[in-house]
Length: 356
Image (spheres, rainbow, N blue to C red):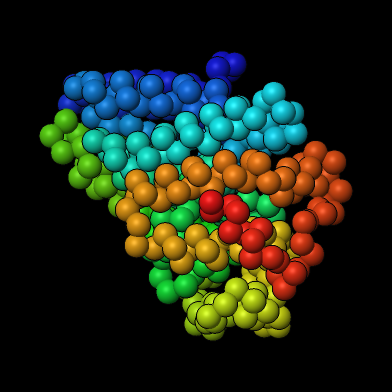
């Protein structure tokens, strides 16, 4: 196996065009997105976009466990705690959001095979794709509430465009989504069994229509594969619990919604876990989620990414994220010492400073 963090391939097709394949190649870290990977992906995607011989791009992760389980947060932690490395964190967020934004605006089809863990930075890569595939093994989430951050990488854009207030609920709780959940909230376009990946690729590359209408060609074969996969997909929890989620998030203040979610006593195990995740998460993060969700809903995509860039740089400075990463991944004591112990203790000046 190559030791390159991203593997690039060009597959010939029957229509004499090619498909560019980018494979995240760090399976031991669940393909966590590093600055090196970002700096490899962006220029290659730009080259493929300008190459008339490339009909479409396919993004995937090495191994069966993850497309991308998130950003390299240990790298971000070190950029926070070591004063001479703060520019590493600035570069990471700035260049990551440029890459994510480019995928949204890409002039050719981008297939994202979102098998296994697709979280944080991985969802940032997936969300902007034209053909987003979730599988029976997909576990999709924005779990930043647990590390003192907020759903970035475009989360301020796509959470506000989900049905009802499901986006607010997911941002506050970091709840994991299955394939049909992702389809319901608009984060996936097709639900396909992972074992059909090679078959789908073969059918696409064997179809001469790829050269004439690559988007239609790809969607046709993904649709056929989805038909074969229906029995393997678990039902959507979000769809089934939609009314409950609407009730839990029905409030005019963060304090009210926080109390309703964390007081949940129903019989849904996913909602119970979501409630406990919020209760253990950073109160600062919850406040950032609440404000971003309400303030970005009518912004353009470009405006959202610029707001996220500024907010994320403030998160590098303020320390809450470093403490969350320390507790979860460095010392692994899972006992974060958040700046404020509860939502009710938060000072408005503290939160306002993140947005100044």
